Amino acid sequence: MKLLEGVRYPSEHSVLHIACLKGCLDYLGAGISYSWLCGGTGHAFVINIHAEVDVQGVNDWNPQMLFELAPNLGYRCTGLKEWGPSLGDGFPAKQQEARDLIQRSIDRGNPCYGFCVDPANPDYSPLCGYHDEGYYFTHIGSSEPSGPIAWEKLGTMWVPMLEVYAVELCEPASDEVVVREAFRMALRHAAGPQEWIRPEARSGLAAFTAWADCLESGEALLLHHDWNLQVWLDCRKTAVEFLTEAKSRIGKAEDHFDAAMQHYRLVADRLREAKSLVPATETTWDERLKFTSPEAAQLIRAAGEAEGQALSCLEQIVAEL
Image (cartoon, rainbow, N blue to C red; front, side, top):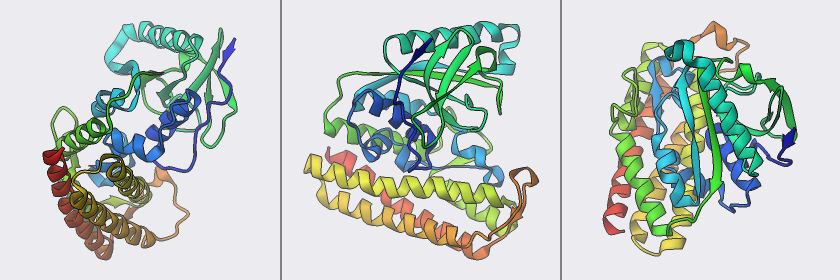
């Protein structure tokens, strides 16, 4: 049996992929703020809206940019991501590969994380230990290990996705490189590249339009709409924090940084106002209750207009760095 004691899963933020990664990096003593992590990976500046504003849109996009940008921040993620049904008879072998990765990494003192590895959390969670029977993970808001969960459960809970990553530290790039490359990736994501965005989803400005259209037509799912608001609001608030930190570190393009902050504050304000319009309900996720709100749609469109101005500022910053 091997446990890494104290791998905390912070509960202060809604972007659970970044939150559990922050817990792993804190354990390793990386000293990276949440805003620098979320902004430096580009996540603070992206949006992905799925048909019906389904909650799966929050994670159902290719996060390649997060891993490509990670070394700039001083860490690397290595692992595997496989859709279980596509593996057929090869699925047990891939499970073994994931098990080997977890054990090897934890033996070296490096935590891991995975998707849908917690029976109570259909999102990302830190992996902090193992023994012969299975692996240990950390619940949201806790640093206490939970488990073991049988190795055979990997890639079978919530959705049949086998996704596990090991986290290790490396030498970071300069602050200027962190900011420039994060903005380049964010701008690329906003353009909706086919290799990153699913056909039924929209990113960038098109995401705000699709979201507003769903709210006007009554096709938006209520609880899913609310969670999308929570996640993308968290991102835009963090975008402002990252821009503030980046401006102080770099000392260039200060007017463009100020303008970007102003626009992202407007995006966050409009999303916050839209969230205040979500009615209280006792419905469940399974009921998939739909929601119509022209007023919320108007706020989402206004957020999209501010987002467009903000993205233009990012382009200008990249040009000056």
